[in-house]
Length: 112
Image (cartoon, rainbow, N blue to C red; front, side, top):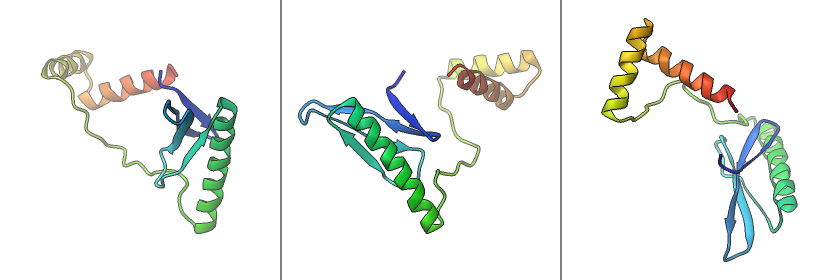
């Protein structure tokens, strides 16, 4: 699993720069670019939490949504063989390919 931080429902990426000896990241799933950094794990976590809180405050003050909006549809690229197997599985189950994909996504998300 990828290293991430979570706070107030937000996810922050975690990276390390060996050249700078610095942890850094950004808040994911928002419309703005909000970054944070620290020289230790504690500093990184505190900076992330501070930036999340500041982001929420800024958005509320400016009347902007705090999270990115999602349409509810997206394209998924898979191999021809996986596509064929997915269609065959959906057909055998008596459901649509879309329903099969939604079930698989829900199952994967519940495992977190």
